[in-house]
Image (tube, rainbow over all chains, first blue to last red; front, side, top):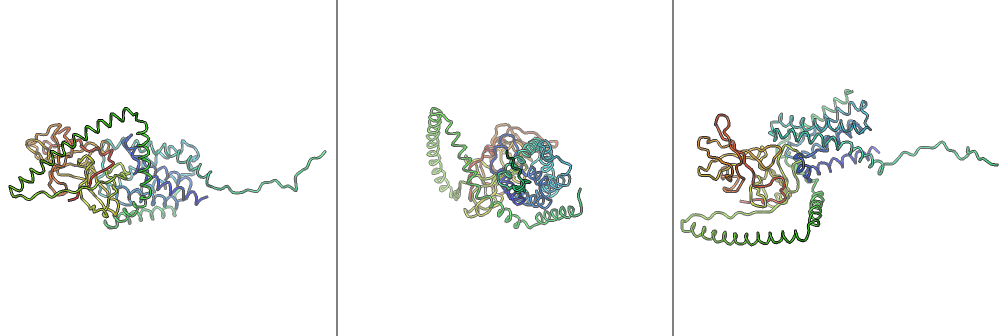
Length: 182
Length: 269
């Protein structure tokens, strides 16, 4: 079950990065591309261990940077920090509630680009920033927030369809069946 | 709450990040290209989806609309044939005159058509990836034009089958430009805004002589050696003096539609 969760998560991260780069219709409509990696980090942080959270941050961050003009590896730390904070507080979160998922998605999607831009500026890069960036940040935050509960639902369906259920013994025993006769 | 093993995990990830960030430039570039090539099998899926969307859109067009479009394209084709014939004649005349003046003829430029396959997933860069690479003779810093022949940017990184193009408006793509007016002001095309990809800034440092007006065409000046002279960049929409008239900042509306780039020309020397 855990292996299936990992396979699904990493495959989704791979496809999410490709979707962000290959399908620009969200950018054409709203002026900003939504990132699905922060919602994935929320899912991983609420359902998997810290090692998996770290592995997802490394893999998805490196994949994201490989298709971007970002320096390779700059996205790892922001994604991991978000995952770590949620993972550390996950016992306090009602993780099955869509509203909680929405709020966590909003937090993750808002914080990740800010951390990335701060890291880029620290590294001496000159990213394209201006007043329009605020609008892009808003779209990224709201888009990520809306995507998070949807992602939880999709993963839930995938587990239901592909996962197996543990066989539990029933309390029914044929030798103890009370046969009622006339 | 966080415990010691968690701090160790965080430290390890930070260390890994620092290690990757401090790799030499050529190693990072190779790693990026290798990782980017993992997505190659999905390119067919993306182009297939976009083609299917296009076909679905075509299916919705009425026959009357198609006939009208056909007629319009037919007229445009006739007009372009006439223009091409006139250009041929001008080319011959140019060659004759150059021969008379004993000037060396300009080297003929070669173009290769490429498809835009991926866009930068980050909102703070303006780059695209095209499906031509070093196997096709593409190298860094080659100019890239739109399908209509307007300047789009330059090649920034080259892999065997893919190349990354820095688009105009990206902070790392600067172009020496010239305004087509009487005083022929020179300037530098720099970064654009993060939201509107059709506008970029141009700085002219000869403020006392500037005569920039909306509608004037901006072309490449040929200075710097990266871009050949005379490629159309866009038109001026606004100009104002900055820093007590130290220089003039003009807004240039790009001729190429960077938001809808599908095919581009790579210009070979």
